[in-house]
Structure formats: C-alpha cells, structure tokens
Image 1 (tube, one colour):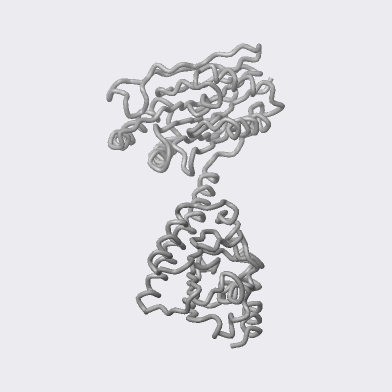
Image 2: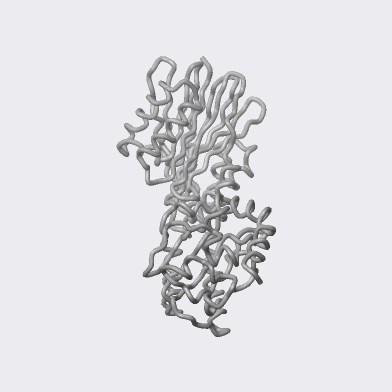
Length: 401
C-alpha cells in the first residue's frame, strides 16, 4: 500500500471519528495535564519488558500527536504533527501494527523520524479505544533504532498493557459521569413567594460525604444538611444511603424522620466506624417557624434583620453515636422578615481559621453580597483561594424583608 493510499484512507475515515476523538479527549482532560504516574508506570514497564529504546502513550488530536507519557533516551517534544508519525498513519487500523524495519516499509520509509534522529527502524503500536463506541484516541507504542520482530506472546503482552492504558484513560470518563450524577442530585434554588433557598456543595475529591436537600410541599419546606465523617468514596456511599433513607420519610415530622433514619443507618455507620452530623428541619413559609432536630451538627448561623446574629448550638450526639432509645431534642426558631439562615458543613470553617468565628466571616460575606448567587460564587472563589481540604457545603434560607 502506498503512502498516498495510507493517508487518503486515513483522511476518508477521519471525519466523524476525529470529531468523536476530539470530544473524548476534551472529556478525558489529560492532554494538557502533564506527566501522570498512572501512565508513566505503563510506559516504563513496556520499555523494560521489551528492551526497546523508547515506549510511548500517545493521544491523537486533529492534526497533532500528543506524547502523554514517554520513556525514551531521545525525548520528543510535547506534540508532533500527526502525519509525521507511525501512530498517525496506523491509527485507522483496528489491531496491533508491527514494523520490523521502517526503511524497508514504503508506508513509513519517508518519515522524518526514520530518516533523521532518532532514526527509528522498529515500531510496534496498539490503538487505544475509549468510550461506549470504542473510539480510537491514541496508541501505546514501542520504537527502536535497530530492526527487530515480536513474537505472538510479545504482541499479546503489548495488547494487555494497552488494555491497562485504556482503563486508566477511562477513569476520567467515569469521574465525569460521577460528577454529572452528583450535580443532578443537587437541589435547585427555590424561589418561593417571600423566600429564597439555595446552596452549593464542593466535594474535596470526586464524591462528597456531605449532602444537602430541600423539598417543597405546599407551604412547608423540609431542609437537610448532613456531613458524614471522612472524605472520599466511603463517606460518599454512606451519605448516599442517608439521603435515600431520609427522602423516603419526607412526609414525617423532623423528630420522627430522624429517629427512623437513625434506626436504619446507624448500623451501617457503626460497621464503617463512622458517624454523621445532621440538621433536619421543617419550615412553615407562612409563619417563618422552623422546627428542627440537630444531631451533633451545630453549624447554623441565624442572621437577624437588625444586623445581629445567633449561632444555633447542638445538644445531641451525631447519627451513629447517639444512645439508642433516647429521644432527641427538638429545636424551634422563627425567621422574621429580613432574616436569613446559613447552614454549613465543617468544611466551611476551613475557609478561614477553622473555628466558629469562621461562621461570622461567612455571614459577613453573605450580608455584603448583592444576592444569593453572588454569595455562593464568593464561597466558591474563597474555596479556590483557600482550599478547605474537606467537603464543603453551604445552604441559605432567606426570608424577604
């Protein structure tokens, strides 16, 4: 097959595939992220296993080949024109490509890397597929300045390393799916007559051990902010279980709902050697009365219309630590016209000095913000400047003046 035939074939096959590839690379978000050990490990093993001069994990853009990971004495720049590479010319093929001697192969004999430094003679590459439609996004490949061949077992090993690389690439898509699901679970801002309710949750990693929720039913709104001890997937799974258990009891008054929740989830929390703080209340929007149970949370700031503020303190232990059979305390407050309630997880305290004084700083930020959206944007900006190192949730309930 001539070079012109190869390039023509690639061009004809590339139109829809190039678009899919570009979309996938954008979703994977790995091209510009620099070296990553999860990919370096694969190319390092490949080079050592085959004893070659270089091994690469390459990602194919529209017209450039990005060298995501390379183990080579001759270091290549961050990208190379796609048509000037073995990978670019073989990307449209489905299986492994092995070139024993590129100088004797008319498909590749004109390549700059064959005729100039690093004078590549041997090449072997396996396409990397990602996504539901197995779009080819790049290659895992080997190069060497000496002609050589691969045995059938060698090819199988290279394919197995490519599968490993594909799975590492796919984790980026999995993370995006998780983020999309979690974003969909976050409640939308509520704009009831005379009331505004909204919030934001920023996980420390991908999955948050915090959750917040509100549900409107006629003139009442059920409000929840919870924080499972710890971070990451384990805390996120426990939080998801709590959220589901509480939503199943959305028609019950707070003391009954929390007691039933605790009966259901406390064994799971104990088995995981964890606990969870929780604030759960029911707001009557006609009177401003809020009846609530605070299970060890204690991170609620009542901003009064006259400029004063009150921190609601908890007298009960968290879910999973509260003695079985002991009734929880029930609190009550009234949000007067012009009042606001700011409910947070403990990650919010890390935005400043880790003490309850941070609640007042947060309250001051809210008071000087033009509206709820500006306030939440300010919280997110603060989190970027001062990484809380923990999951962060902030919820506001505001009554019009």
